[in-house]
Length: 420
Image (cartoon, rainbow, N blue to C red; front, top):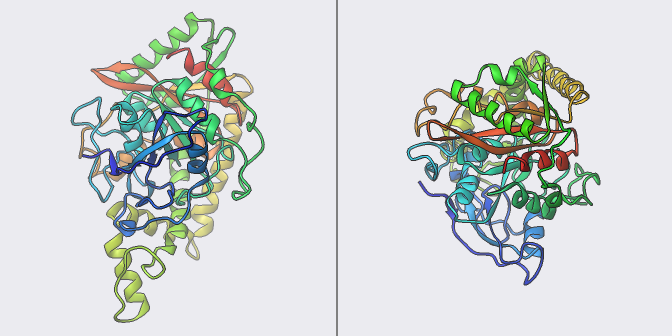
């Protein structure tokens, strides 16, 4: 039930904006000389020879890295139970999951094991554990933060994002890691000069908040009540709310999983046990060695997603699945753009349910996939989002998600800070 896979301190520079601050780093972000496993037996002994760009920036800013946090294997999961190193328990809800896939990072902040943490968000993997652990998590606009050194799961969807106890603390970490990187061609110049921490001033007077009905209707009754109570707090501070529609989100989960699994099947092909990773031995023919390495090195959820992704990309099925999923993605993006033309931010419950009991969803992968219904559309649309604690239902944390236009991090940070 550990929060960390590897507890090892890496000291940062003597001074800087994060001097004296401890940061936990998700175990799919490369750290020079420190084991990086992705929560998988495949990489149990892998030690990267270089730092990810975000890790370089942490160290330059004076932060001390205190360990590599537990995660769903290769980021594939919503509960941090698919890790080869065992599950992590939610530190603020006994017997419950911390969310995933960055569950260890959120738990580290919630438990006081680190001041801040980094996770990665492919379809909600920062926002989900932030909501379940009662902390703040930010999923940046695609291209704001370098992915150099992040072990790839689904390149077109994932972003590294910060966790903090408060909106301002998470925003200060985003200030450090954001900005273009010549080693990652997907990074952009937008937002590089922003002062995100200063945006956390709680001023929501005149803010227009759109509430997508489709992201509220299917949520647990207690979650919905807590969500609307939090909206009432924002309205009391001068914000206005109105309903908007995102018809396309009905297809977002299906589209997301086809795209993510397809990209995963391609990305994980490199793990063959020959160049690095778990070895399948050297007897027999290459196919047998390759197959044995993957059979022994990958867990059940990773195998499921690789197989489904390979199938979706196979001859005769590419147009039927992958192309349709990309069409649906374009529709989702268009829907968000239209909704955000009528509102400054969009608000929904981060997760439609409170934290599940440990073991509850492992036997039903579909239930786990559907829990991502409110978070995956944001990744499909390449937009920024933040999860901020909204309150509790039956003693369990509930998160409120705010979504903004591309590179509109300052707006969602300002809105979220009004609930701090």
